[in-house]
Image (cartoon, rainbow, N blue to C red):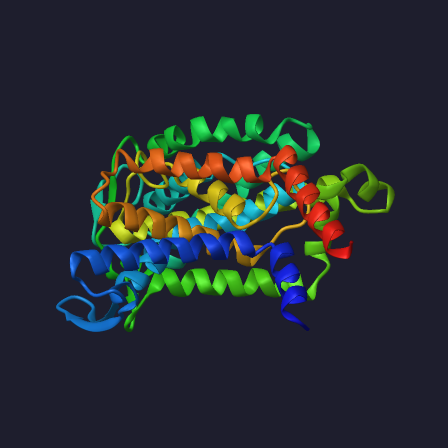
Length: 360
């Protein structure tokens, strides 16, 4: 394979956009670190540090990005399937995270209890119940989208608005604290490695294996490209779309457990706040079309961690938490503009003209 052929293959790859974005973020960090005298490659430095509570742990900005970006990566897994299958986004995932966390903590503490050291039910019961609550929410969204043909954004707007309020009702308008080490494990460390990184890696591996070893991925892409043709070909389009929303809700439930475990409490007003934006942006940044069809799971994961890297970089550059969403919004505009049909048509026409001139 000569260089020209390799270059054309790279240009057509879905991973081009997320990889380039990640490289740009790294370049900004390298320049910033070099300018401040911290060392040009301190961004990539990983060390072992001893703490009083967790023993020896891995420390570094990359570890922090992988750790803090775990919830967004989990949401991006489900969002990728939803976008591909239904050509729409699930804007309720952040609120569903909050509801799942509240439901789990309420069961572990007991209804009406605001703080506890002893669990009212076994830990596994509370965790599984929280994840099942996410599946129920996903099933509800899927019912509206797949069975009642409601636009995805409109259908998921219901739980986007209501899930946090339901979470508050479940917790009796309290922030429920679970001061138990076994619950805090999901947001803490397993040896030197942050547990959220391990949980996310397991979820990615399982979903990737299922998509690779079964025809589910092909079915989802087929339905997303043309649901009517897929139905004629014998696929149950409604069931596939419904399943995609259930899986999305399940990952939102897992993310909610991780998020609540980090703070050992259920703060319904703040858990998952604005994370739906990060999940959607991760899918778009991953080179996936928001119009449905072919998807790249790897691209979405890279996109999720790139978003977290951007957030970390903005804070390092002195941008406040209130200003950071503005920069994210600018990135969304650029990505959507790049994926717009007129822009794609212009790029294809330009490449065709170059190819024609080369032949001539």
